[in-house]
Image (cartoon, rainbow, N blue to C red; front, top):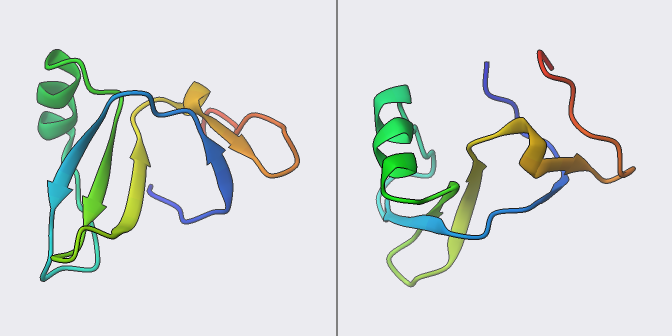
Length: 75
């Protein structure tokens, strides 16, 4: 289940997804697999003006809570 949290993300090669009308980036599992196959390790959702409104890391090991602890596997 997706969660919103304040965290550090290690996303090196994100896919930039233009979702200017939506404020929620719904990345389906098949889309994640396709983006991983293209070499992406996350996705950034952007507005029409190019500002980022959502960040998605594809692996739990890319996420660190603000306290520095890794996020639990089944979080």
